[in-house]
Image (cartoon, rainbow, N blue to C red; front, side):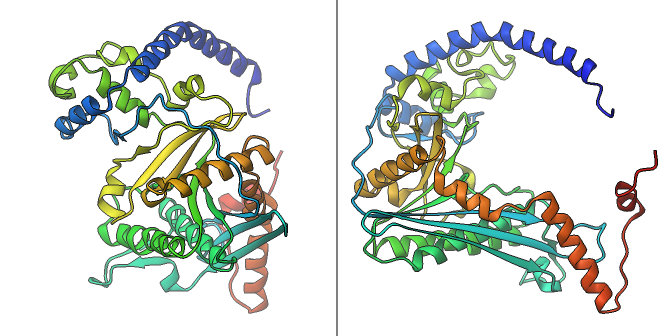
Length: 403
């Protein structure tokens, strides 16, 4: 037995004891956070946030233009509507197999409700194997390039997912109210340590260009665009709670609290260790959504051009989910209401999670057996063409049992 479960069980018990000891203090901080939210002054907060923009230690403190204690009930559903969802999976470059390549699989689910119900499920795999497909090239300096693997491949997959969403929406009737839905965030994460030409291709020429296409489509049809985050681990709104609870005129974290440990700063009484969802689980009844908050993420500010990203929290009945939307949806009351109604409806049709995303995931997922079969197909194709087939001894050892 590789894992000693007896020793592990004892460590789990100690972990549980520590968590139980911490729980009482956390509940007190959560009560304090709710007091701050219920007494939140949006004008005073925005003044404080603007004055402290360069000195805050908390990244991406959101813009709050509506009282965060606001609760919005779900609007009525349209008689006829459609939900389009995409998800993706990939097989990364593997140095243990004899060909340098990667695969991205995009799953799409189109569900139509009302007088002409329908369901269309598709899966589109794309193998990248040519030399120019395996790298991102700096067009201004041909000697500079970035191999597409690891985190870069994850970002490329996000680009292909939103492009798949654009393609699916284009095929729909233009008069049918539609929700275009992605899994995860609309703020595409990419390590800012990558060179500018990598970020430009993936963000500006990839993800943001697809947002441009979706906005153009939304100008001609009733189209809402959103991303759904299940069990969100964000404390972004809690940054606003910290600013609101700060006793100083300018929230200069380094000057006022730089020498203080976590838990002893003035704002910690209302925010330390608290997640956004834990606050909104106390505020929102089933079916309700929160106020809309505008992200100030530096990724959005620097790379998203005219697209702002906003977010709200929703009580699906089973969990508090986070919904991210482009600013042009947040500013359109009809499309904001459509987003709320259709996301909630999708969660109710699924086990508290949008059923369209569940189906898109099923189309996209690449299983362990799929990965093994993929490697076998690569090796068989090379052998059929009398090309060398090789692997590392480490990889070979994993296929054999010696004892």
